[in-house]
Amino acid sequence: MDSPYAQAVAYYGFSAFLELLAEPFYIRAQRRSRFRLRFVTETMATVLRSLVTFYFVNFTERHVSLGFAFGQLAYGVTILICYAIAQLDFAYIGCALFLGKTKVKWGGTLRLVQTFSTQALLKLFLAEGEKGVLLMVGNADSQGVYGLVSSLGSLFVRIVLQPFEEIAFVAFSKKNNSQTTKRKKIENEAKVFATLMRVSGMLGLLVAVHGPLYSELAIRLLYGKQWADTKDVTKSLGAFSVMVLILALNGTSEAYAHAVMKPNELNGSNVALLSTSLLNIIMSIYLQPRVGPTGLIISNSISMCLRFAYTMSFVVNERFRGCKLTMATFFPHHVVCLAFIGSFVTTSVTSKLDMWTHILAGFVSVSGILMSILFYERNTLTNIVELKTRRKMD
Image (cartoon, rainbow, N blue to C red; front, side, top):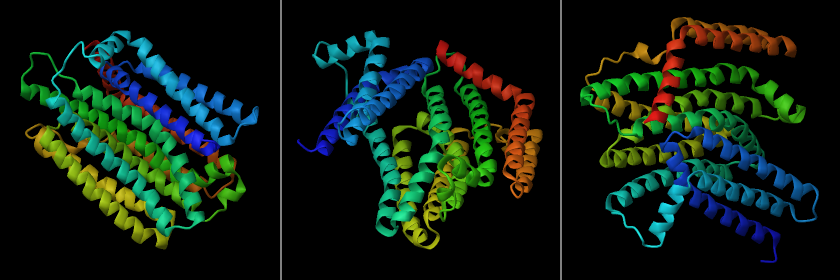
């Protein structure tokens, strides 16, 4: 292990092992709606990783790869220690189980683990399949463009949408101990689901409406003129912005479906996921040489739409059969919709003017959308807050 790269891989592997040890603590915290614990833990771990990486890269003579590896190792250690200290009772239970002092029945648990592991592998196959296609049929320029666009575009997904989806999954996966009938329980679920979908749609629309019109400006301000003038960068980032809307809707619908599906229904969902993943790879191989990195985003969007259609088919036709759900319940208030349309028209016009006028128009437009949401979707926002509060009390 004289090579610094080999040492870095070993440190990354050990960090991954520590993060796996922390996973049960993370799941328990999510199940108990301890979102503040997650926020504090991940913030501390991320800041520490950045500081450690910065120190070893800039102030030591060690290889750069080791600096990043040490940073990742600090992240894994912090995640495990913070989650474990905050849940010492659970740590004692885990130790007793590991030492054989307590026993559990593994049958149903192992089957559930198998189902979700299959699902995780399929999602990994979907994510990494795009990179494989890019390596096979794309040149170095296309790889660089797609890497930049996916990294920048996925910031909103990781920071806003992913936690929102996890909250939705936790909200629906908890058992309801109240004395309400099953029919009433399903009707309440339908109302909450419609609320979450409406919020997801508004979050996705914020990016989809403004992303294509501000993608060139964002690239120019963040990465400079050279990247902004690079072929396909602006177009690809704009396409990714539109895909964020599909990601938002699909993420929330899948979070609900996976929380309430039975094992056989989850297996059917995994088959659908595999089918759309294969279709995504086939379309990527066809489109990438013809339209560049944007082809990967188009194929991913089509695949995501098919997944969304499958999930909504299950939700509407199976889970909520007989419930009084109309399409209007999934859409924002008409004033909010008009605010989005007005913002799109305004920023489309100012995109042809000077930069500062375009930036000011975007700021005013987004402010107008947020104000309309605050006034006309107040009940929706209140329901989200009440949902979080109620789940923390369960």
